[in-house]
Structures are given as structure tokens and as C-alpha cells.
Amino acid sequence: MNGLARSLSGRMHYAWIVAGLVFVLLMCAAGVRSAPGVLIIPLERALGWDRATISSAVALNLVLFGLMGPFAGGAMLRFGIRRTILVALVLLASGTALSTQMTQPWHLMLTWGLMVGVGSGMAATVLAATVVNRWFTERRGMVMGLLTASTATGQLLFLPLLAAISEAAGWQAVAWTVAAVMLAIIPLIAWLMVERPQDLGLHSYGAASSEPGAGNAATGNPITIAWHALARALPVRDFWLLFGSFFICGLSTNGLIGTHFIAFCFDGGLPEVQAAGILAMMGIFNLVGTTLSGWLSDRFDSRWLLFWFYGLRGLSLVYLPYADLTPSGLAVFSIFYGLDWIATVPPTLRITTDMFGRRDAAVIFGWIFMGHQLGAGIAAFGGGAIRSVFGTYTGAFLVAGLMCAVAAFGVLVIRRGGRAPAAAAA
Image (cartoon, rainbow, N blue to C red; front, side, top):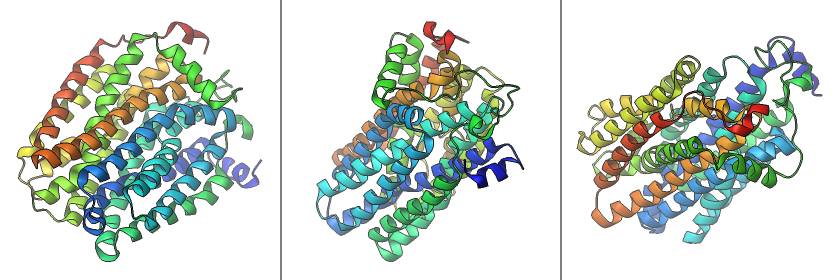
């Protein structure tokens, strides 16, 4: 075992170091995922592709980002977190670097669509869920909130920077920047990532003794592990309620706002760098809101938390098309939308863990997260298509707001404290 890891574990519980590594990784991966929102206008100008064509690659990226979730969870169970993450980082660095040479739309689909989609799906929310369930017994909700909020931090750090780089040096410089960041993380993961507390002779944080099955390696291949977990989940009604609500979550966040907000502001006369700054400001509120969501999910009924998160998000989306497109005019939207951008993740994972047990929760959450990204992919393409046909994003925002209302009431049907029949032994 890594001597540096053992030395650090003597100073604090190593769970916090693992959580810190994952925070940095997810924060930087968020920079990769936020890049397409910055690149839409520059690619239109430089290569002459229309917004629907560019949005198609973003949609593929988002769908693969979600589709990889359960299989990434299975790979982490079978091969370990470190190996899975290292493969993901190589894919992300390669895909973004190769995109600097693209001249045809299919090159965009291959690099930012396929390679970045698969790589980001292997280093995403399912990774956070795996680490939280493996390394923490106490403060799971709070830590999941912090790790989820890392995407907001990445957005805050990278969006204005990438927009400024694009404006000053062109879209290729954006791709080279994110590729370099991915390569820089590889040594950190290789040296410091430890698979489970038992590897250092520790219990998970807050546990008085080892918890059976929580961190054991799985047998079989990741595809089999993922499909077996899905087979457990399919007959459970509440799984479908979570899947459907997360479909709407992805549609109303990554797919619509994450992809099209900068372009929407540009249509209204707001410069790209200024629009990226507003999107980054939402990241500040998201950092606060998602961390608070994790804290609340340790203490209150997660169903009601989700009701308020989806309801407030829906209201903010209905408001957006009629807001004054100035930094001050968008402040109200930035606050309310930013506070619950991804605040839905900790309560959703909490319900999933309570329902299916700690061992399988991350993989089943991966399937639920696939619903999130299917919704995101539909909104990424649909938002671009609506803009191309009608010349405005208004219809897309209103539909997303209505669907958030559906999700808000749908989550209240989930049984409180329910557990899937086969989960009792997990």
C-alpha cells in the first residue's frame, strides 16, 4: 500500500482525503462538461455549423455521460475506483486534444460526443456515490452534497476562464486547456487514491466496526454487475419514480441551461464572457444550495426536499424568458435557479441507498442517473432545434418549467423509508 497514503491517514481519517481527491476530480471534469456551452458560438463562427448540428454532439455527450453511469459503477466494484478513473482521464484528455483537429461535424460527434461523453460518464456522480457509501457511515448526505457541489465550483472556476480563452485565442485553445487539466490530475489519482478503508486498516468514517459488504470487491464483469442491479430495480415502482424525476432534472439543468444559457443570453445582446460569468455566479449559489441539501437530507424527509427543489426550479425557468437580459435583471434567476441546480442529487441518493442498500446503491443510482442524462440529451438537442425553428428559446424554458412541476408532485408518491424486497440482505 502507498506509504504516502498511510502517512496521511495517521493525521486525519483518510476518508476526507479521498473525498478531497474526488472533489478536485469532479470539479475539473465539470470544466470539460461546461466547455460545449462556451464553444457553441465560436464553432458557429469558425466552422459554419448551425446550432442544431453542434447541439447534436452535445446531446450525444450528455446521453453517454448518463449511460456510462451504471457500468462505471460496476467497473469500480470489479476493477477498483483508481483504475476506472485513470481510464476516464485518458479518454477525456485524448478526446479534447483530438478535437482541435476537427473539420467535419462527425469529428465533433467522435471527440466531444463519444470520447468525452464516455470519459465523463466514468468520472461523474456515480463515482461520488461509490466513495460516499464506501468511505462514510456518518455525514453521508453532507459529503455527497459537497462532492455534487464540486461541479458548481468547477463551473465557477472554468466557465469565465474558458470563455475568455475562447475570445482571446480561439476555440482550439479551450480544448487544449481542458486536455492539460485532465492530464495534470492523473498523478494525483495514481498516488493517493485508496480503494476502501480496510486497505489502510480503517473503518469507514463514523463506523465503530467494519460493515459487512459495504466495500467488498465484486466478482464478474462490470456489464453483468450493472444488469443484475437493474434487474433488482426494475420491478420496484419507486425506482421508476426516481428515474422519471431525474429525467426531468437533467432536462432542466445540464441539457437546457448548461448547454444553451450562454447562447440564449447572446441572442438577447449579452456578450459571451458576461453570460459565462452569470452562469458561473449560479455556481456560487449552487455550491451553497447543494451542500445545504446534503446536510438537510441527513435530517429531513428527502421526498419533501425534492418537492421544493423541483418546484422552485420550475418557477425560475418559467420566469427566465421574460427576465431583463442584463446582469442585474438575471440576478433573481441566478439566485433561485443556482441554489437548487443539482441540489436534487443528495436526497435522491439517500432514497436509493435506503431502498437498495449500500453495496448496490451506487450502481442503481447509476441507472437513475442515466435517466438524468437522457433528459439532458433530449433538452440539449431539443433546445437547439426549437431555437433553430422558432428563433427563440422561450418554448423550451416553458416546457421545462412545466415538467419540473410534474416532478415536484411525482416524488411525493415515493414511499417513505421504503426498501426493495431483495435489499434487506445488502
